[in-house]
Image (cartoon, rainbow, N blue to C red; front, top):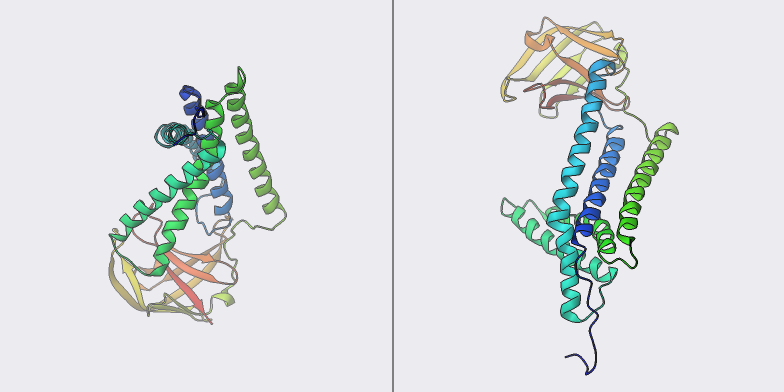
Length: 313
């Protein structure tokens, strides 16, 4: 019960348009920056895509346009479904408790809602099965992810909805837009600097000699390819896959192998296998110099699934 003569501090009403707009811009900026971080991280992962040319240029332009569309849609959707409701919920809590509508209250609201959603979503995933204590990590990871994603946008949106002076809402909007652009530029600069200084390294396929190929390469499930120095290769139980990606058999045969230098940077060498059933098509080298692999694509061309064998010493 409030003391006699005490008047609660009422949070400001209205400004929902500014709250929604700033929330959308903030979420859009977060989406673009997260995508940039993902791209910078993915550069060091093993990849076997195309290189250069008109196709690469069109692919890059399409990816940029798609990112712009996705960031706008994500900003509008998340602002309407999460950011605006969180700010309004914080105002409602302030009115109900007679507290001052502060950024701490908004942050606490985001944290409580994030933890609640993490508990609900995480519990739903357990309905499909529980594989061990490691699955419990879904709760803190999901809660932290929601807080990190929603808290900056909610705080910025709250500031736009609580203007102190005329025109303050537009200044908040401009500050969020410029801040997002600045963070994007800083992230890009850090990424370029890390790769330029070789702190991080862009993935390069291994450059192996024929002597490096000699030995046994296994899939870890009993199948193997044994490359001999005289140019022969022996396959034992090497799996065969149909067009759907399902295993349809296994190969046991002997043939010839050859490592041919290629002009491309993505595929510096091409591995050919002859006189050994259907193994004569589609073999590539992957992995790294220290841990090379031999693989072939399985299933549909765009599935990204590979059948991989690792060199044994």
